[in-house]
Length: 199
Image 1: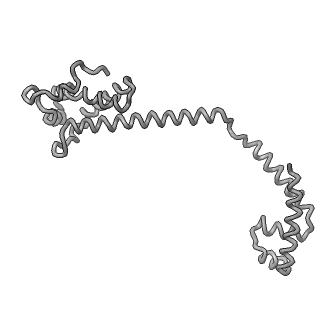
Image 2: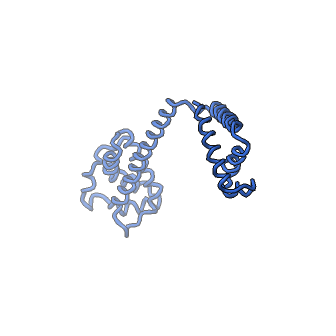
Image 3: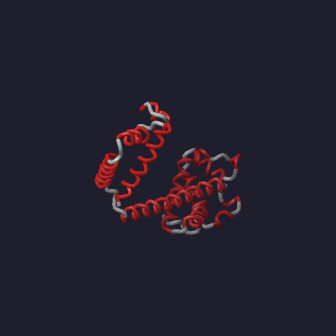
């Protein structure tokens, strides 16, 4: 959007008699008055562009955002309430919000691109490799369990695979708790030694 010449902040300082006030123009715009919109556009486009440019910084994007604000002004003029403040304050609030949204959106897009670039440098996880590795580990554990005595294997399996407590293991095997604890300790020691050979 190319801002019209002479639409800078100086327009805001014109005498009341030179131009209908922005408040009245905005009320007329809310009623669909196109001529009032043209006058309001000439009155506020400079300050809107200036504010947006201070927030967004990039001139081309600032022109885009300012244009969006002025179009929104036409569409949402009916939301203006003169009792809550001046038309210019309301318009500049719209401009500030839209400019901040653009900056946040640009920042989020930049962060997304950065994440995608980082992901591109790290190949996707190889699920087949993971499954093969997990199967090899399971096979190794099975072999190590086979090296335990039957009672050690039974105790370890009940406790670590089935989730039973030592006391519950003792009850299921009809053995004293102390015996189960001893067998479990010995079994885990042997299992640990055996699994240490994985590397």
